[in-house]
Amino acid sequence: MTIKPALTRRQYLAATGASALVLGLGAQPGSAQMAMIRQGYQTNIWGMPTYYLMKSGALERRGLKFQEFAVPSGNLTMQQMVGRQVDLGTYAGQSFLIGHDRGGLVAIALIEYVGKTAQVVTRKDLNITSIEGLKGKKIANQVGSSIANVFVDTIGPKFGLRKADFQEIRMNVNDMVAAMVARTIDAMVNVEPYNAIAVADGIGVSILDFSGFDRMPVLMAATPEFVDKHPATVVAYLQAWRDVAADFKSNSEKVTNVIHGFFTDKGYKMDRKAFAQALARVEVSPGFPAELHGYLQNEAEVLLREKKINAMPDWKKALRPEFWAKASS
Image 1 (cartoon, rainbow, N blue to C red):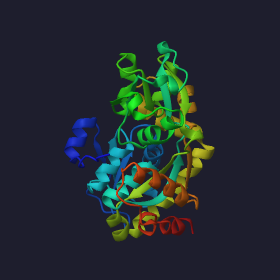
Image 2: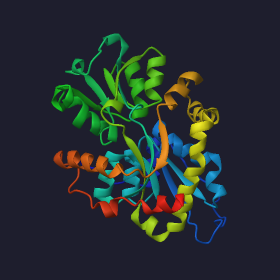
Image 3: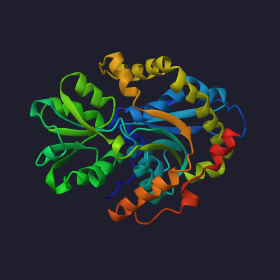
């Protein structure tokens, strides 16, 4: 796979309709050691824990200022970071490994598991009930994203579905439901809340989620320059993640209200109960588990075999658990 050159900030804003919201510009950080954070996040449900972090006030309480950069999916945030337009951003392991290969990006924490949110959804009128039934069909897939890689490289082959067996339609995840309504695609490889929207509206049927094949840990990645120049900021930032983690476990109504509001403000209409169920499929558990290394090793072997990365990572450079360890002390 060829990664396109990182787009300029102006190009991203024009293409996605997103804006860079600046908090506290012109003001001095709470500490001379604290740097302004350029926070990237994706506007599907994988990015919503990061969105909640920014809206919760936890960063400000730690003396941190930030700018937010919203894009449709994490692989676009990764490209921004490779281009050094963003300092921090979340995406799944496959995109992280490509970002490390292309731009030396480093992982500072695992934020969540999202395998339950990634699904294959087929058009309801077609009555397709299995992955095998997708042969010869038009499947929307955000090429370059982690879910696209897992579907093409892992899940499809397990069911005898090779890439040559279907017509891959390159499309952003936030455009897929409309394409399904227009019947220009037969199925989509997508994430929440778009899967739940399609199912709730009687447009699609979910035939498989990824959790049985890949829990899909989502990492908080950083540029190496940022962590080397601003270690105190990184530690304070991860402490803010520890502060908000309790909300996801014990104050789900507050979290749901904030995130549901994000999507309704974007014009999505979705029953709040159905949305809460979709959000519950995101397992928010910030940390740096020991098994992360082995998981990424296996994923890197797949990406290397598929020639999507050029070499195995130097894990001592790619994984930086010391920041989480200090934040937790």
